[in-house]
Image (tube, rainbow, N blue to C red; front, side):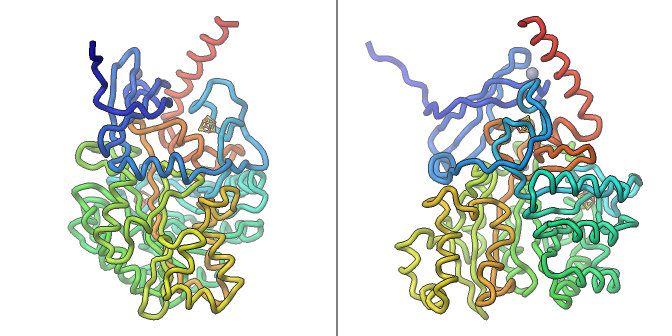
Length: 474
Ligand code: SF4
Ligand code: SF4
Ligand SMILES: [Zn+2]
């Protein structure tokens, strides 16, 4: 008798949440051809199947090769009582420290973007007090010792009335690298503001919203004509030598054909250190999120980078080991008019193979060693460089003075999971965390799904159910 086979490979089990009721559910990872799916089943709401990668070989690279021992924070902030994801955080079951801590200093914004996960806008007027922001910064320092990267965000952080007092408060703490997450409006319009900001160099970086060069697209993503604002903001940042990352929220069918254009645009500026690509997810104001039309997986974004950038190939974009499910990166060196993708030269043999790179590396044996270490993360899993924070800020420091900030160009793909594609195994490795005034650090996706604003009500209901069920079992 011949048995029937399932038409797919059963790769793994994991857990997720039901998109309808947000309760934890069982999930399977199945591979069908090149596609990888998360299959979920809720006793109340039935089955769901969500595409999580369209390149099974790349997905498996992140699961099987780019893996490292979790790096822990100095302390945990909450006990384990209800199970993941209802104990954030960080609870002792979390498997990665905060590579990047986000400190939201205001709900106010001068835009009202249709894709805003924080649902900020002009009508929201609440700013965190300086005392609250200091408590959030202290929470990050208590968890991290010397935090690698802290990002001031919002809302629009540059509109906070105490913005520079907050920068001073951050500077007074042992934070290595400070980022300002901004839509660029104030930078474009206020020369004195940018000049004062430049006084905080080095160790400060502008994380500049930059979805497109075209107003038709910016209208869809941000509800405003911003192309001219972006151009003026970039000109000022270039003039003041302020390190900048262009941050592109990517929506399938809207701007996913413009990834190469934004990367090439960024390469024209000395101040631009790279482009971060964030596929849009079903969070916050993104209420008209149509997954079938707009969701993009990391592997799809990676392929677009390879197809459109004219610079990076597929081999240049690799999983970031601290959270390989949701992060991918590629590095290039900018040397005059030449741009040399570096990531493909991972590993000791390959390092010496490319004659152009050999010239660079042989100039400085110490740098060669440092760059070798940075790019051999898959050979030394304990390496610090396998952390998102190192990828964000450490290469320029390591390479200086032989190479400066202006020589580095980085492409990062940062996916934030939503209720549909949430893999709790990957969430436990989240290394981008929101600081809270009460001392908690909550993983990015968990915060937007379970803890932000009114969402906490639903989470409290689930926590109460779990507590009651647990009491019955005792
Ligand atoms: S996401 Fe992390 S911090 Fe939150 S409950 Fe799960 S393991 Fe704990
Ligand atoms: S996405 Fe940024 S710029 Fe847009 S409304 Fe939200 S906080 Fe403001
Ligand atoms: Zn359900």
